[in-house]
View 1 (cartoon, one colour):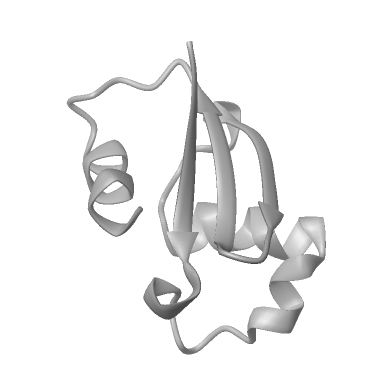
View 2 (spheres, helix red, strand yellow; view 1 turned 90 degrees about the vertical axis):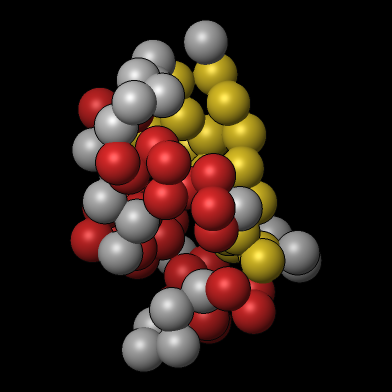
Length: 73
């Protein structure tokens, strides 16, 4: 099952330049390194007007990265 999350701009890690997140590879890297989302669960990621839009699939609700994603989104 796919799930969609938006991480508001104000909640993004300040050590990252927001303009860099408009590039797919940088946004994907942010998801893997900062949000700890395993690459195999990431369907799509894009920087939008409201924030970083992340679509994931096949998430296990008991995993730490999934819980953290719910907190920041």
